[in-house]
Image (cartoon, rainbow, N blue to C red; front, top):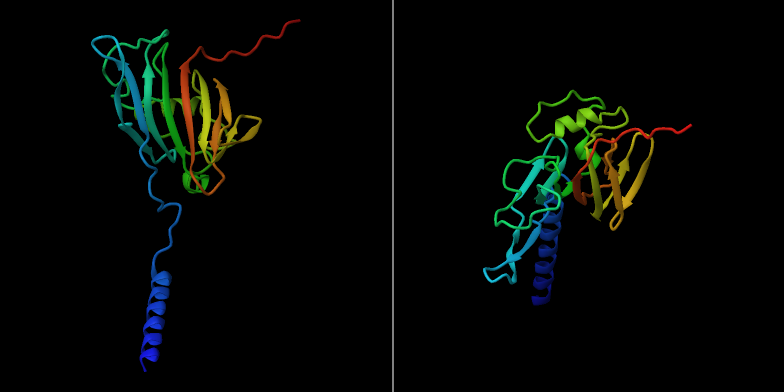
Length: 220
C-alpha cells in the first residue's frame, strides 16, 4: 500500500511539472533579458605622479535606440589630436552624438538586434525622422540608399571589431559577413549593417574625425 501511494505521489508531481512546462510562456528574442552592463576601467595618476586605477565601474551612458534597433554604450572620447590625457571628468557626460568632436575620437560599443526586430515593420524608404540632436538623422540622409534601411555616411575613419555574434557590413555594391574577432576599417563611405541571425551582434567602434571622402582623380 505504501508503494502504491508513493508511486501516485511521484506521478502526480511529474504531471504537475509537465503542466508547468506547457503552461509557462516561451522565451522569445524580443523578450530576452538586456545585455549586462559593460565594465569600464580608467587609469590616471595620483598627486605624486604615480599611475593608478581612477575608476572601475559600469559605463554610465547607455542609449537604447528604438528607431535603429540598437543599444549604444558610450565608453570614451577625445577632443583633440594629440589627445589631452589630463583632467578628471568623464568626457562621455552629455547628450549622445554620433560624430566624434572635431580633431577628436569616440569609443563605443553597439549591440545590433536581429533585422527581423530592427526592420520588420520598417518600409525600405521610410520617411526621415526629426533630428533629435544626435547627428544620426543627418548621417542617414547623407548616406541614404535604396538597397537597405539604415545606410549612413560619416566623415570619420572607423575601426570596427565584432565582439560577439555575426553581422553583414553593406556598401553600395558589396557585402561581407563579419564574425567575432573580425575587423572592418570603414573609411568614410556610405554603409549599413544587417544582422540576419536570430541573436544580437555586439561590435566595438572607434570613430576618428576625418576629412570628407573625395573621389580619386584619374590620371591620364
